Image (tube, rainbow, N blue to C red; front, side, top):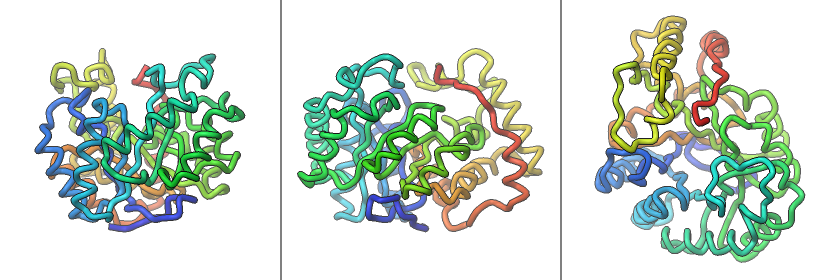
Length: 323
């Protein structure tokens, strides 16, 4: 497993991390607690030492599972978590002030709850789970971040940028008060490359690339016949004719690259993200040992060939399935 600097955080992380939303048992249906623990252990055995979770993932369930594994690992794993918006609205809504979303006392209380769930003394990376660029000048988050750093309860700080809004993070990057940003980046959504990534490189900001498979689209396993469990988040994400659209776009990529079949696409999708020098780590969701094994194979293979990257540039797809 290769490692990369996490911006100004002061430490390196595995270039493939573990996205822990899916192990919460909420919204992503199917994995049991034992499945999730086995996947986490397998990830660490294969060299992953960065796990991204959040207080909102199963109302603490994901954090508690991650904390168990982190303690087993004896300090070999870095943990990132997130403060959920107080109004529980994802993404941040225009016109709603930070006093309704991240008031100082609420941020501090959320951190204490996460520390209890994780059962650790210090969080390696704390992120605000939504962001609105109108809040850049506000005191609430600035005071909270300064207090948390001084207290020693948090090592590094960042924001998770709203879905498909990479440029909304540039203002807070320029303050010099954060260490990382988390952003959607994949073959379909390449927009962070335009303005966000250059800003991150300029200001030494770590980039956590989330949703490398577009919630499953880029695994090559979704078509019109795909059925998700009742209550699964993906029923909404792939509603209407979206599965058909996905299959058409995926087939176009497979044909354009001359891949043997869609089964080769996940490795390409991961290496696409890792080909950017701005990216510190990519955090696919992993709920089984087989997904851990498949995803970790992308590490150390180096950037995709230039001709393949050039072809993939043409497959950017401007849409928002979260809406």
